[in-house]
Image 1: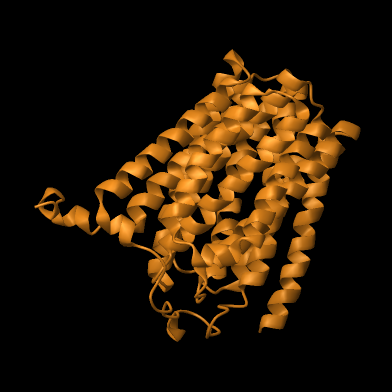
Image 2: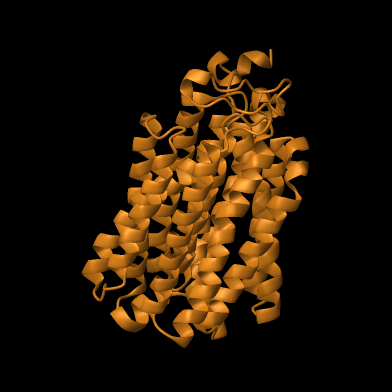
Length: 401
């Protein structure tokens, strides 16, 4: 009788039913937190640009180390308990951060929040990609990327507007969304047995057929993952700058409101979502190393243009274009990192560690350069990182031939 209470179609629900909406909600809360945290630290704790960069970099470093050190655990742990630990832990630590506002405790609780976050993204994407390869893997990744990037689009605008009312409001909203997502997942797992039963694959995932790309090693996948990760790292150096230093520069020099700052940052993520949509419908970039170089050269060209940006209008044009470039860098790192691999959750942990490593460098170095020099010095550093990535990618692609 109990089985009849669940419609047959719902009884076959799989990982996409959890991961896509979960990615949207978690990214939505993360986006509000990331932008709101900058204004919170500056207004509530009087933090300098350099200190904001260090706090952000430290917390992301905790996340990165968590992904690296726990990647074998993620391969063994069923995704459902991992996601629940993340979704109940994140709002708890953020609430303590808001209720106990001191700089040492901010370091402590922001680090614990990021450690809890490590239990979400890697297991979620590992679960989503189980048993799929080639075009099917690309389509799932595209929908996943659109889910989280769409969440960021809306959250940055809301964070900018909310922080104009109160510097702590974006954090309170983030806590509410995380807690709501935890309740929804708990209810879904209780209502649908198929979601509770899903877990680690019983047999190795099939490798991509040779006609879709180069032969893949039995456990490692394609060697293109290395240049793809290099490009993704450099792309997230820029992301770290955009998230931590640009909001301060926009207020200090451009003289815009926090709502406008949120809209500018959101425009970058909006075009990134469009890029994910296009890349998910196309396969021209699969196993094609030249597209990794093209995306990085495109990013470098935009950074050269940014050296001369002096108005809000200029940034309003540049930021969406940056979003398009970052979509190919991110999608390339994700697809080539997972393709052919049998240890999906562990490979996703490396993916998350790589992109967040770039974010750490971008946030900390940009914060110090902005405080000691200027925004032009910050952009020049990001440009140097992109040019170094192009050189490294070229060498790796040459070795891979």
